[in-house]
Length: 296
Image (cartoon, rainbow, N blue to C red; front, side, top):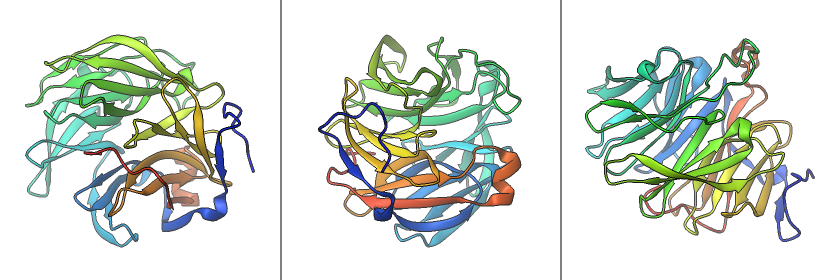
């Protein structure tokens, strides 16, 4: 069994044999969300957003051009979908995609994951450089989209801002900085703006991608180059580590009828030149002891 390098002696390790696959044959599953009793996720490189039941039955498939990324819902129930290559935020209206916001005013490269607050404010990360071309990493900033679609620049100097969660009853945003090997927190003001930047957890050699929040305020981190999904307490202590075998976890989400199912988006590669041919992507799940945070 792998050891992550940052876990303490208190860490509980679980093997890949405990995982249960509910969906297979995907290109590159990412950005999962548990919403109204089912799991939604983007199959990025296949240009699809897919809704499945907890058992893996496909309920619907939406075609979204230009690689769909982060998913979320406005307070009125309308779905938001990030168009990564187009730097557009779409709203699903009567089964039709319409442009809700232009992220290109803030994002210089591909837009990425997203979290939507209870008030409808959306926070979206982006690559900051051309990852697939092998360009050197560059710091970048979040885009903030107010209810109604107005776009403003959020905090800058972030190293590949990726998965995000909102915690502390809506008062704190936590961002996974993949190239920074850390989780970074910001205070959320009444107007949705972000300030008081601080390190939530240093992760050592772990590279965080997608993240999700549990009811004890701990964060599950998909360590996308470490073949493990780990549960981290604020401050950086790794409490649990789940081995994902020969696949890497790129995102995770708690859900299921009681919130105790950890769904993981696993794949053998993140390179779109390989993923569509290999179709190694799958949704794996495992039961965990602490359920999802309320509202997750």
